[in-house]
Figure 1 (cartoon, helix red, strand yellow):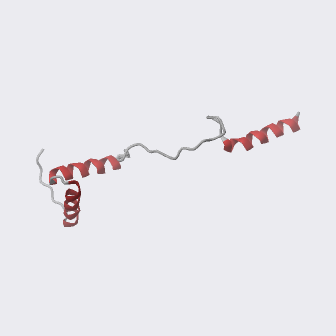
Figure 2 (cartoon, one colour; figure 1 turned 30 degrees about the vertical axis):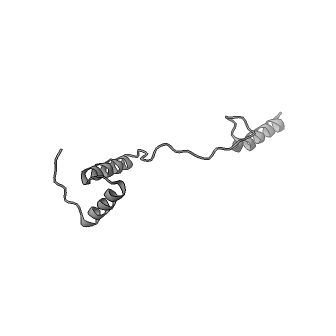
Figure 3 (cartoon, rainbow, N blue to C red; figure 1 turned 90 degrees about the vertical axis):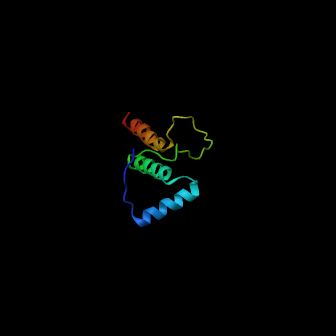
Length: 82
């Protein structure tokens, strides 16, 4: 689709810098930047999946260490009631 865009001078300079770093034409640069911007606004992840640190744990998967004190408290309460 062909259209006319009126782009602020500051944005035009930023697009030109982007074009130089990516070695692409103005049309390609604008399309890439629009896709990234629209994806960001829509809440989509532009850079890909998140990957966090991995570590070994002595606990089996599915065990919540933060809930162990709650469980201990509940068991203790049951002992006092019985």
